Length: 410
Ligand SMILES: [Zn+2]
Figure 1 (cartoon, rainbow, N blue to C red):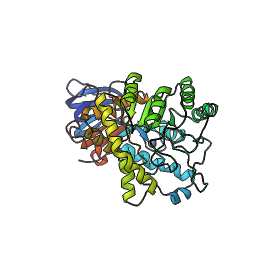
Figure 2: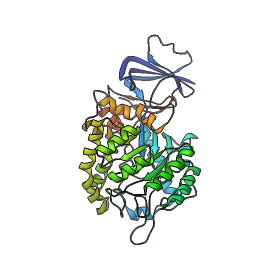
Figure 3: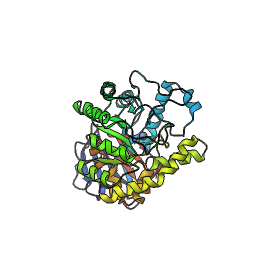
Figure 4: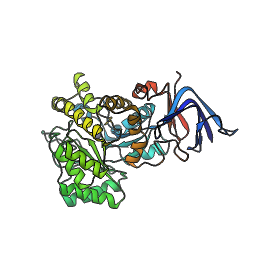
């Protein structure tokens, strides 16, 4: 099956160049040619997709989502009455909304077992290409310890989603092996406290340097990298010293941490939009008071920290923590990155070329021959108007592996 997608323009994020009267040819899911219509031989049996009025660009990549999280605030009574299978089914709707927002690839930062990715690959339901971390590992009382002071524990381990809480070097080695056995593409650690967890603080570090090192080592020997939920300055530095690849959130970066990131070629995944959603949910009465207080306390420092990283030339990869906010709202992050000084093209690269490189997913983030036929169409030039990528209704066309998965009239 060959498809020919005819658009008004084609934006290549790698070069920043846009060409008019474009055509993208996709054969058996892979791009064979993307360029000007003049001079492109369109095979006679190609099925034509009319994308007139639209600028085409590679499908977007979100490096930090949680497809099994509802994204509608935290309601513990609701969580207590949600069977694990129903929790899993949330991913079906979230996957559809993510795709509709133009995100054809994601890295799930915990919650989704490998089965979610496998079901999408098998075509059971539409969704983005996925890398999964399965479980986010934290220390006792840490970010993903779901014990509450009443004694209840909301983290129910599943056969294919190992328990999140782990302490000690040897226990960490075993747990990382278990997570890899369950199908994780990446390992997720929490090297600091966080906003939505009841018993810890974002400015406190978590896990020892030795524990983090053990996890990185175990990941490396099996060809995986580690992403660290790292908000506290000490938690960021421990993660970097131990050799993690990506820093998530990065609320309290300083000059030394930035130097370490530049030296180690680490990427920062800012998730600027996440604390905004905590506050919005809170205003709608859908957040416990401890989370509101913590979100309000970090939001300005978070912005200042990411701004410093941008100005210092740290690599930023696009990530939203969606699942805190509603699925499909991912694109708002573009506006927040731009607000802090990132040029529109750099914002787009963060969600295409840079994201693909950061998470190590092959054949995404670009439309060069051999890439997956994943692309989107928006009504105008996103370089002059980033809003076009910020709202799902502006994403008029979504193609994944050559198949039209969303098409809406202008
Ligand atoms: Zn997260």
